[in-house]
Amino acid sequence: MLSAAILAELQALLGVDRVFADAATLALYASDETPKSCLPDAVLFPTSHDDVVAIVQLANRHRLALVARGAGSGNVGGAMPVTGSLVVSFECMTRIIEFDAANRLVVVEPGVVTDDIDALANTVGLMYAPDPGSGAYCRIGGNLAMNAAGPRCVKYGATRDHVLGLRAVTGDGREIRVGGRTTKYATAYDLTRLLVGSEGTLALITEATLKLIPAPESVATLRVCYASNAAACAAVSRIMAQPVVPSALEFMDRRAIDTIREYGAAEGLPTGTQAVLMVEADGVAADVPRQIAALEHSLVGDGLLEIQSGFTAEAIAALWIARKSLSHAVKKIAPLKINEDVVVPVARLANLVNAIDALGKHHGVPIVSFGHAGNGNLHVNLMVHADDADEMTRARNCRDALIEAVIGLGGSLSGEHGIGSEKRHYVGRELDAATLAMMRDVKRLFDPLGLLNPGKKLPDEQAAR
Image (tube, rainbow, N blue to C red; front, side, top):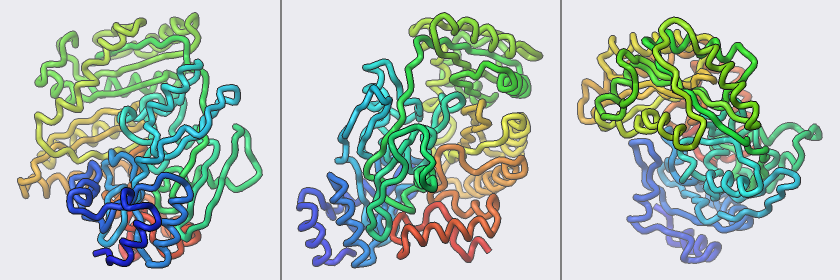
């Protein structure tokens, strides 16, 4: 429990209306979307970069752990407190510091909602390309921490690819600026890309300079139904081997389609549909039909049942109904979703899908898979009942076997959700000892006392040996 003296020091630093240690607030910030929780000792609401510097310096004096938090929408425990920690919520740092349309950049504080950045860019014909599914409420600081992505990642890249520079505070209270304001920058080590995806373990980001790009004039969508997962995966490989890069390439597996049918949202899908691809193209209006024609050509193959196209906002929305309903539909299977955000080389996507099917049957665990097929990134959802001990044991064994299968296919533990506390004990299976040792050296350089987001990203040293 935080001492009265330290609580008073924090209140003097930030103001009594920015420091909370009451039971209701602590409970509210005890977890993210992970079904676990841990009460922090206090929740702090800085409003400026200087506030963050002062917080980190105070934490060093008293050796207090700090856990940065945006909207708490992550699902790997990245923003979950540890015993005796202080949550640093960036909800009040929501300023758009600069919007420079001429140079296609925006400078923002970490509490800005992600979709608001894109909406601002859209006012002058630009866009902020990363589009995580939680974009309507997640904060850019959390996106930076986890290197968030989304459907457009297949064409435009993840968050890391759209960050020009950062202002941050290291774990020992140093203020740093990394990167710059230009798309070409070769002066320094690329600490910008290092900090993005570091999950708040190296520094607290207080300001981000983000790259904007021209918004496409036109978007068109294809909904493509196949008779099997294998047929859909083969089509993904064909698409990614030809010159037209889709702006989205989403996959729903056989179990996902069954779930949507049970939910009553499969209207319009032809009989026998076992897998669906959602494919989009964007760009200059006159060129989009050419792109769609090229994509359609690649989509044709064994197992194709139907291709539906949409060129208007209304038609596109109608085609996406089945995919958009999936998150709600899966809750009818079981109340708890164990979400694995795994990624494999695109040409091995079919191998991953086959492995998932086999593991679900072997362990008796319902699994629904969907995601960003163009990157080989699937969200593998093990649907379970938390109060069923036997089912939870089977789910843990299934998850463990899934990770082994992914690594065996040359894949990775996470494509866009991060590692957090939930996956860190698997990291040693993917990374060799020398790489882990260097990562720990980097952590110590930025955060000598280990105060920033402890228990996240890296496995315990003993466990990794």
